Image (cartoon, rainbow, N blue to C red; front, side, top):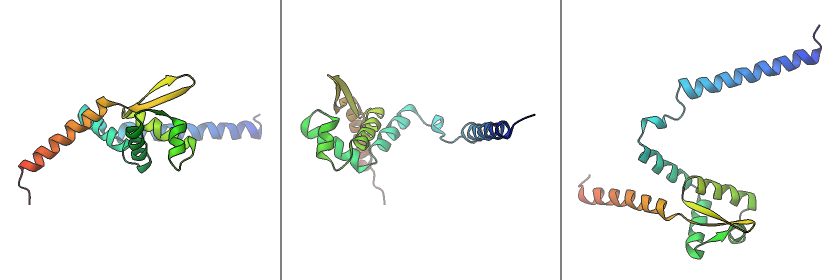
Length: 137
């Protein structure tokens, strides 16, 4: 005979299985993101734009432009944010390719990734040229 704990544990496992199944349905069948319908370039620009969508990240980029390179502690001293918050923002910027980090001793030295900035420059230059040539409204 099952103990009450065994029945409780079985119910928890069933609940977790239902959650996994629902997540699969939402993601696979309903298509939660639909990124596969867009080009690699469009997805790349969207990822970069998403990472730029927070004022703290803009402040980090502006600070990096001013000092050229620094470690997380320098940014913490500059911005009114806690160290874990700055680290999370640095992670998002790095995942988007906006900044890069090199290990320097027991710290990571961050700087702006020129390749990504060039991608943005090319993208926005094309927009400016198109808008300048068109006679909209």
